[in-house]
Length: 485
Ligand code: ADP
Image (cartoon, rainbow, N blue to C red; front, side, top):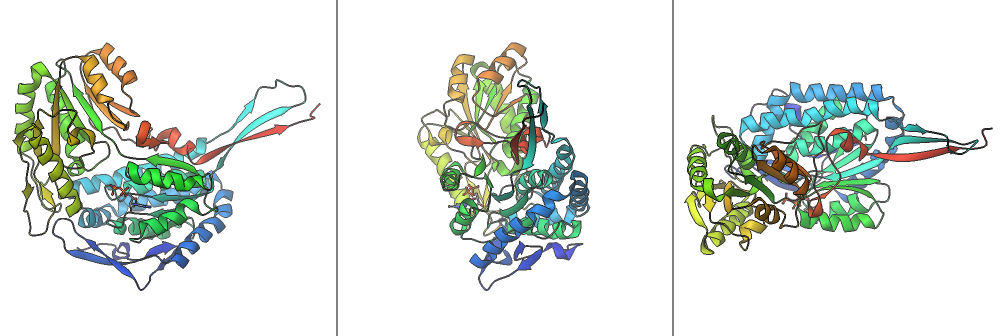
């Protein structure tokens, strides 16, 4: 890999503006071929303590800056992300596997949160309330919550960090993140750009290590930390939420999903197929908003399946750096095994395999699974009830709107849902009745820095993006001035 800016390649924790290595290391592998691309230092307990201490010590001077001063620094960070886009995308594809074009897109997408939040912070105003008691004046201030810690997943190694860090830093908070140990290099490159942007030491820290539990205990329980933000599985999120309860931390939880994508017989079929492709095959199906259950109205099912299967057949699977590749490897062996199990058990229970259904050996040790289409999927199957996280389209047929609404809501998850129809009244009805934090209408790609991303039910709490995302890093403080008459 040839980086124009070789200093982006870092292999130790970024704490208080400096790199901290240790004697213990862990390997980072390229999921396309199993090749070890880096040996990264495990953060030590002492270094972790230093990260918390420096985030705390840098808090008052970061808060004391004017919103414009913070904004100017963050603007440099944003410019550097774009200026280093190619290098950052190369690092991302090498450790995560996604096609290079998608990695390039993720860098811009992540950076856009910095751009959006440095502007939005200028509007984080409070309020002066109308006088309703003589001699009293009531004011509301918005104040940064303080030191923020975060744990992020491997599927968007850049953007899942910046979605949180951009809002936190713009609000005046300081930040410590533990990225997934499968993809620490993109996170560390962001740390290098924090130095180049002039973000003061201690304001942005990255701690890397394989002992997620030990690091997580500090990040969720240290009383100095005021807020914890997590993106990952519901099972781990529940555990971390319980840990946060010990110090009553403010939390944001962006957890798993089981997205329904519903296609009615009045939908524009081209639009619906495009929606499925965007929602399902981005990142090889490894996003929490990937359509997990595709519901198709019975009388259009044969035509839809035929057209969709033909489109999916054309997808080029391969190593992310190869030209024209749309579907890269899955992140690790375990992920391939899980997808394999879900597909095989669905077939054993009566689902029909229309395409794929097997591993692909792109290279000896790559984690490739073929784009797959299953029909006749039913609610009793594991594939209906679990997040697939792979390139598998799982199709269920339905007859009425009432029936499909019930089936779509038949899950503990509530992150994202999609509907395809040209009927305005139905769009409105389902936007209200689907128990999800987000509804895509004739659209498979929703995420946007200006919009509130997040879920209901066991998909979590809090929002990332938009006004709501900034508010999650602000406390509401009430000031009452008395005896004014
Ligand atoms: P995924 O299915 O995306 O791998 P996880 O919830 O397992 O989701 O992982 C998301 C993040 O949570 C990663 O950074 C991982 O290292 C971290 N993590 C996993 N288990 C724990 C734990 N017990 N305590 C703290 N962090 C954890």
